Image (cartoon, rainbow, N blue to C red; front, side):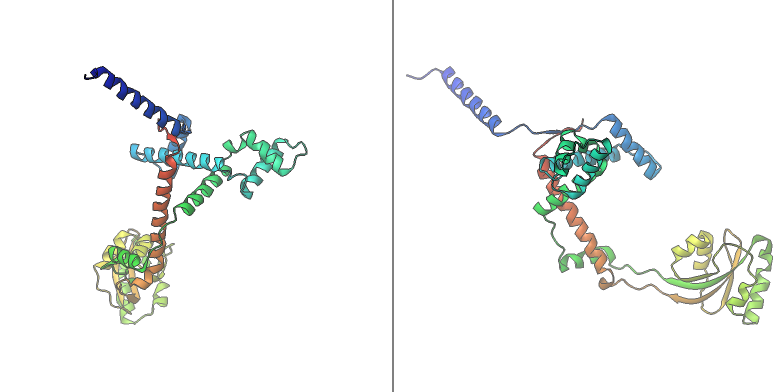
Length: 308
């Protein structure tokens, strides 16, 4: 005789209940991290505004909040694993704080530190928090070590970043500045300098007083632009540039200029050996970031992260 169907459903329900109960017993309650307070969020906005002269976008603010919560998680983990008690910098800070508060009771340093932690002094000390966060990151990096860049990695990065790229040309020059009131003298002075084959130092004595540099050595166009302005560079680029000759007049926002170019070093293709240290450093930093991301992801499994 077939058993009633309701007995089957009771059996399945009982097994499911026992499984869920067993799973709950195996999964301990995780400490909660976050959400951060409105005052801390406002502090993040204020810091951003000071640094960037602007308010953060919603995406930027979300990243700032996530970073703050990650730091809280690192701090919580570092404290729970005893990093404070094992770090001389953090212990010195706590001892100093206790002495400042006058809480000594003739205790030893270790007793002072233990009492300071029991009073939660470490929770409100930003120096200690930053220190513990740094130590926790080092601990994560030891557990999830970054992959060191290989010669092949460096060669690939070079091709991606510098293939077909040349170093900027560099110029060494003198410039004789004539203020707007003397602009009409520029052609006459130019002809005189050319006909008398006057050397730069001699012609510089006719320059109008200014704070502009009279001599630039091995500079790029961008560096010239920062000194003499966009208009000067644009006119210089549109002029034939023979060396050891007087050129001009070249206009700028300041007035007009006569220019004597002593040397031009045309840009050349960048070689791997010239940028190898830079590429290796960048790849190491990228690997470090990736390793920390793995460590963060594993660490988050131990906590209940609350963004709101």
